[in-house]
Image 1: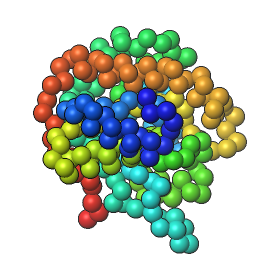
Image 2: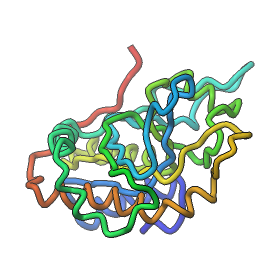
Image 3: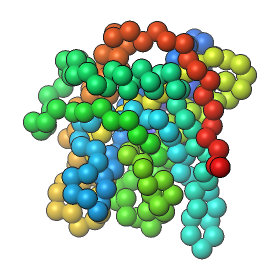
Image 4: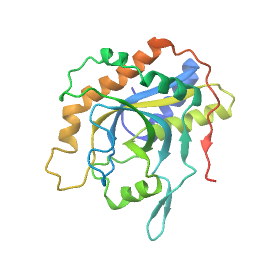
Length: 227
């Protein structure tokens, strides 16, 4: 428990976890906002789905000129060995049995591999002038949250000190940011209705994956650089 949202808090918590326990893996689980393709109806994540991050973009870092330009070098890949294991496990449906909360809807969640944007802001409208520029830079982003970039940067620092720790992030979708004027419940109302189930969904995938046989040796993850 890190006490509050934000990349600074999560970085401090991750560094302390590495110092205290020297783990082989850090699996960061929680909730996120799911992003859909606004040009294609029903394309993207659904409430309750689980997104396993292959890439985490720290979108707060960039240059302000005539418009905001996020820095591509504040982008991190999650551990390849852990990601490969999560992809293999995502094809199974046995993890659903670990979900302890009742879904507000009738569909079963699915596990998705994809990019996640991470920053200090709660994003309720993806067409906002600031965040739309983030999506222009990284159009494949499937979710947005507030801690992943901090954890990833702490893990990168640990690895630079030859500490062999693998990192991956698993997020349950608690809300679907969409343009203002949408006649559906959105923002806080949607999160309040779905956050317990979304948390349980992410935890269920994590628990099921560990129980299925996680012990693989972490690979060396490196920051993604622009080419």
